[in-house]
Length: 490
Image (cartoon, rainbow, N blue to C red; front, side, top):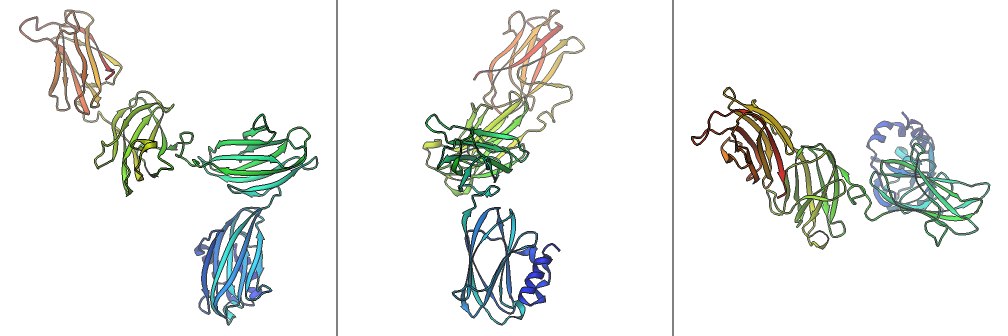
């Protein structure tokens, strides 16, 4: 019932108790309007009023222009704030049918704009109308809320040493806030604080050549309200011009300084163009995570997708052009994360800055949750850079190990005797446990070594550690061993 009072007042002004009907439903279905825009409508006996909502910020000045386009409509314009308080009520302008008036928003929030005919349901006029709302600017007085690209004029003195302004920001926004002296001896000083009053940026003299303050390239880390404190250094005084501007590359993902967070199993859509030819994403990964990244072009444009996987410092780890299932799709598949930490994905186009394509895309990040789920229970799981120990005897003639390999990876596997007379023998098996390569004594002294073997296809592989069983030596050797699995540079 929070709008009941506003509609009651409206009814009294129009001498029509019928306006009180269903205020909650009117609020719920009122369409949103932009501050800068034109609204057309028609009022008659069946529809004596229209209600719109518009978002306003404290200190903003909005000009309302309501004109009749046809018929004999006698229009009335009313504006209520979110608490139901009447902020503006106008009937006819002095020049005839229509309303022209400016309103200063006293609070930030939603406002209700009501366009009605005089008398509402009891009225007799009808016709079309056009309502134009124009943002004239923002008041310079302290406490006003600024939008990006606003400029205000203020004064610093002994009686008013600090002036506060607020603004709403979204995570990833990149801003430049300037405070320039326009008169007096003022030495401008700027501070930016968050909603919890923690200082996040400050500046006194932007350069050696000026005393003006300027905070440049401020990256917003959390969505929410922020406060600008415009003040002075020492006891200087004078007037200033303060402005807040959004950078061209502002927004999450638009720059490597503010990558868009991505989690396993998530997909995000985006678009690339000559003005924005790459977008940046980040994700947290654990050592050994097996990930797949896909970048599929959308229906709009001729984008030739190009993927780059980078470490926390944006050093390239992997990249791909056209490995995806469809033409000009990019794919990095089954990449094993080498160490825990932050990683980045750069979604771009072939030839990057010099490229000529553009359009929509969908980026997906997935993890192979349990690559060892189908591994036999007697197989020991391993990853690159690890070792295992075992013992071969008459009761245990072979041990089985499993690891996940990616096509093109180069591996070395060694089986070194620790005691006994073991004649070590290694076999590398594919997912079907078919032998792809084997070795007897390349490690020297009856030790086995499969050296610099290139993985032929992505998938599960098995290492069988056993003893030599041929006829040219002792088939019954036994002893302990150390097995090492290592990845080599390709």
